[in-house]
Image (cartoon, rainbow, N blue to C red):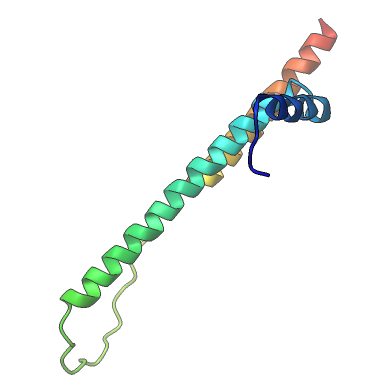
Amino acid sequence: MSNLGVPELLIIALVLVLLFGAKKLPEMARGVGRSLRIFKSETAKLREDDDEHTVQAQAQPAPAQPQPAQPQPQPIQAAPALSAEEQARQLEEQAARLRASAAQADKHA
């Protein structure tokens, strides 16, 4: 069942072109590539965080008696940076707006 030869791959490619159209396939491939890159980077960050957490847990000795907590002023934090996924989404929205405005310009020209 897992033997996919050239004829089978050609049939699959033909069905994809018929379903989605030749213009949509490169856009879909770019979207899948971006999603996979984002997923890969996020899983790598999770692994790094887990590694750092285990190293810190092993390196830290048991704490002595806790001292009474004194309220400390909270530092002013800057707005959080956008994640890679949010940046990609914004870029895709900008590209869609540009394509729409270019299509309208072509209609009026």
